[in-house]
Image 1 (spheres, rainbow, N blue to C red):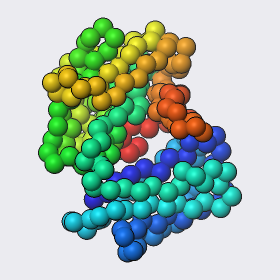
Image 2: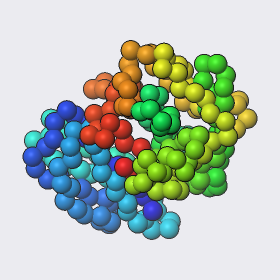
Image 3: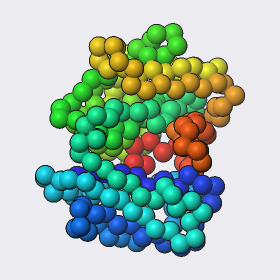
Image 4: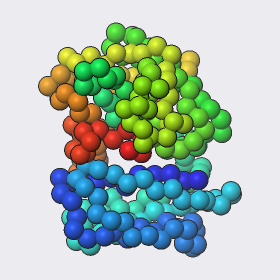
Length: 227
């Protein structure tokens, strides 16, 4: 199963449907009309692949799209094997009584479950294991409480960590390592000035493909998992 998310990173909602097609070699696997997605919101898509799949091409066509250059994605099982999870969203300033969390995106499909470590600037650690699945995963200190707050998230996508590296409101640094802490896989930092109470920070690519972290534009103020 190939799972991915179509995200509207602009500040506008389109007024027309988009057309989505997913191709495996010359075979059309998925063909659908996508309803307008609100600014900052997203839509999750699942496509069943053949067991021994080769290259897959995902194409979305939106009439009058101001930036059509990011509407085609090529996936290969060989390249994906080499990729590691990345930090995708963090929630440092929850509402009163709620908990912090962060989200990883795992594009590769590993052969087995894999363990990782996240460290903050104070070297506090969160240890966890991701299943051998592609997609988005939320890390938190209390999975049961998180699912009460976000019941639309699939339970299998919410991972309770061993230990929790607190996301400081004044700013912090996060480092994602392999289990042995010998290989740095991803990192991000933020300042207190970037934060807004009850809103997440999301990974975003600017027009020059540089990674920036910005406050969520989603109507729900955050969008963990596939919510």
